[in-house]
Length: 218
Image (tube, rainbow, N blue to C red; front, top):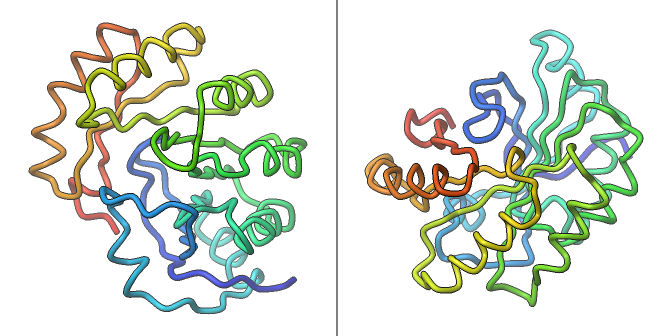
C-alpha cells in the first residue's frame, strides 16, 4: 500500500493532548459510532474521501518536521485500521498521536507497539456499543504510559459520570488522564471549563483546553 484514503490531510497544531505541537492531521471518514456531540460530525457527513500518497505525506513531515495526528472518524475501524498501521509503520516522524474511541485499540497497539514515539489517545465512549470498564483497565495494563485517556466530562447523566470518574481514579493512572469540556464552539467550551477544572482538582487529573476549536486552527 503506497497511498491512503482520508477526508483531510492538513497542516495544523495539536489542540488537546500535546497542545501546541505542529502536526499533520490525517482524518479518516468512517466510524463505528454516531455521537451527537462529535465536533467533526459535519465534516464526516459532507467531505469526500480523497487519495493521498505516503511519499507526499513523508515529504511534508521531512520538510516541516511535523508529527502525525491520526483521527476520524475512527482510526481502528474497518479499512482505517490497516491504513493506520501503514502510516505508523512505513513513515518516519518525530511523534504520532492516535485518537481512538477504543474500537480495536489493543489490536492496533499489538501491531505498532515496537514503535517508540507513538501516543495512543483513548477517548472511551462508554454509552456506545457495550464498552465497559474492564476493557479500559485492559488497555491501561497493556499499553501503560504510551496511553492517554481523554474524558469528555459534560455527560448529562451525572450519576454515571461520577461512577466513571471514580473508576478512573482507582486505576492510579491520573497523570495520564485528561479532562475536556463537551462543546463544538468556543462559547460552549469556555462555559464548560469551570466544571472541568473543579473535577480535575478533585481527582488529580489533567485538563485540556481544546485549543484547536477555541482558536479555529483547523
